[in-house]
Amino acid sequence: MSTRYDFSLQRSFTPYPRELLPVGFQYPKGYLEHSRAMLYPVQFRWWFIDASEEFGDFSWKMRSERPIDWSAYGKDIDPIPFARDGELAAYFDGKDHSGNPVVYVVHLPDNICIARYENFEAWLAAARKESGIGEPPYDKIKADPSYPVAADVSGEYHFCPNCYEASKPLHSYDTAILCDSCGTIFNLR
Image 1 (cartoon, rainbow, N blue to C red):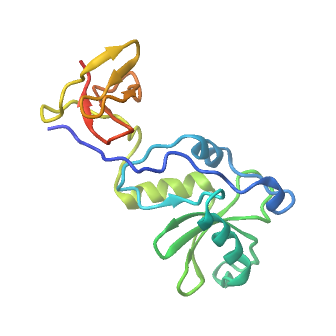
Image 2: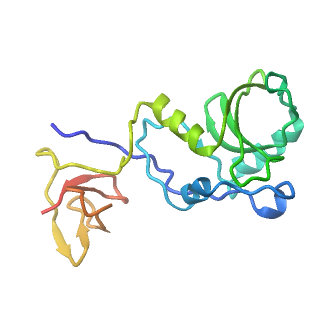
């Protein structure tokens, strides 16, 4: 039997705009790539803060209204929130101008920093491991006899047999497809 992933609805997000960020701070390249296109199974515990949504505004305001105890790491941080997992929040160090900033994880009820990662890639690797989702590609969907077959094909688009919306395979190695509209997984012909 093939592994079936149900995917998170978050496929992209909006980072905070440059004019809001501390002078000299640069987002890491991997984070910006995630903001434009990402696909994780629902087992991935973290979700990325979207600056264009109300919660993004709230997260930005809270960074200055509830001071965080950074003493475990011996320095003052200018926190830039970027991800949440329940009571945990991940922050970039806004005073890091390298383009590859350190990431800190804070336990929000206590406002205490509990972990430090060298950069976004190290944090993301740990987040994937803690979520138990293994290594990418996570978007490889395999055929399963319980999935309905594709209703129709036109060029590189497949039409969902459930809602008849057109979708592209995620990648050329997929043998089944997830319909973005209704969530049905169906086999490719």
